[in-house]
Amino acid sequence: MGNREDLVAGARRCLLERGYARTTVRDIAGAAGVSMAAIGYHYGSKEALLNAALMETVREWGDELARALSADPGVPADRRFAATWTRVVESFERNRPMWAVVYEVYAQIDHASELRQQLVDGMREGRLGLAQLLGGIDPARQPAEADTVGAFYQALLIGVMMQWLVDPESAPTGERLAEALRLVSG
Image (cartoon, rainbow, N blue to C red):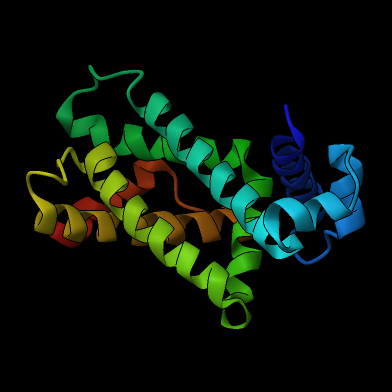
């Protein structure tokens, strides 16, 4: 890897171990094995590097989730929602440090206009990805439906994730979410 890639890898480690606000330039440079000046040279600022590292980490989670959800396409339709959300919750467990950083960043959004735009773009992209991944809707063929269904899944994902981060013992499981959906829709 070159310095640029080493910096992203080091920033990712720091984000997951220390969090966004507590990560220093010195921490990143040490984790990456490069000089502190390399951060400014390659990224302009610590924040720009941390933002790039966070966005890459979240994208990788999306790829991991897509693989996990496509692992068992034979689940009957009546059990698919519960099975899907069981896997989503399992992915929270494997990626807890990342989600803690995501929520830390959300809390600072009013003070970081560059990061806000990256999150806006990421959420829009994520909404369409969720529509396709969880709802089976092709955004290229049904853009309005994909946006609507994706927004539903994104709201559900963010809410379940927050409950899981705060109190995993009482956060909803895939089965409880499926039961709730039956109760509110019928």
